[in-house]
Length: 568
Image (cartoon, rainbow, N blue to C red):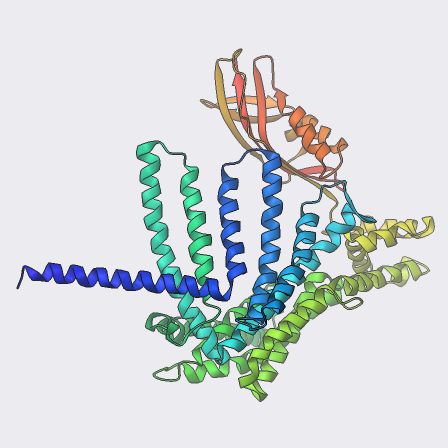
């Protein structure tokens, strides 16, 4: 009997492995059936990323980069298509959308990788750079949100059950992924160590595991099944995560009590804290409502949306003070939209809790309005608000008519408009008399809006002639933030066995200021000036350089460089 136990245990173990492998194979097949083009885009993106790790040719890297951008944008469109027309009998509807989404994917991929000095029709690069991010953000967020909403509707679950089953599936997949990371990492580490294999194979294996297995498995989770919930995820939701959210609420209410007792002003960070609490808490208390049996925290968790309602007033006060003092900016506009979403959610939770899934559509609508709707998008509203603050100064007879708060507002508005594309066009149209009136407020309070030259370039040194030198030292230096000019003029650093050398770093960096920002000209200047002569015996060859230069203060705020120091 004792001799048969190992064999029986081995058979049982193999049966479990076969069952798990068959389940994984079935899940991957099901994902490919439901989302064939989306999964194909994910796999192709992963393979191209793996190839890109070992490629040094810039033209090939640029081409693969464009293809990968295309796959990202097209994958979002195909995900929307397959969620909308899933297993649709009229296949031609899906095919039409598949073809239609090629157009925005190609357009966005081309514009994202556009060269600095290029144009699109009559639009210059600066115009494209200003408008493109908002349209990409709108495209990605709206399509992804609508796709998840369609999957939620097709799953046929309540929002509580849908989120709980997706979370349970994500937990199972994440645990398995973590185990695979360790196993694959050990195997690749052995290969690298024993067979002198390039270390890049370790990174490539991890990328393949992430894209081919993990992301594809999570994609399967947007269409959860009845058996996807598990006891481990149930414990996490019912006790751990809900308990943490309740604890966070308790701390916030103690803080509110402190404000009321001592009459303190709320901290500037309170809006971010409450926003994080809402974003993390909403799915947790929603999922917790799914587990109605043996759930000691259920009653408390159902009260949390109502307990958050007073916190919305605290958020409104916090962001209202900022808008009153500094005006509306795109980020503050987003904060207002978040408040609107929170109010709509609490209202819907009170009157029609079972219809909470409509919040997907609400979120998509708010994103579209904030990014794209003319006249009310975040950039148009911010521009008009800041412009009105500046016009108060321009319309005043003398600055003494205005309060200090109005002068500070106008100063901040000027620097906001200075960095805004329509705002800079407005400032260029001002008369000399108006410019003169603005001189005083510009010098009176310099805002956080700086005109900077942010340079970054990296190019690996593949061949280095060391025939006339005895030593070669790797150099990796970072100059301090807010570095003083005299320190940069004669910048000293140590190398080798605590040797010290001084270079005229500021004189070298000044050469970049004559090149056009973010252009091929500045990168070509780096290639032709990567050698810095330190003294008669030493030369520094750069393969990486980054720095920020502030045109207003005329200072380098930080400098980082890497390369090799050759010494005779």
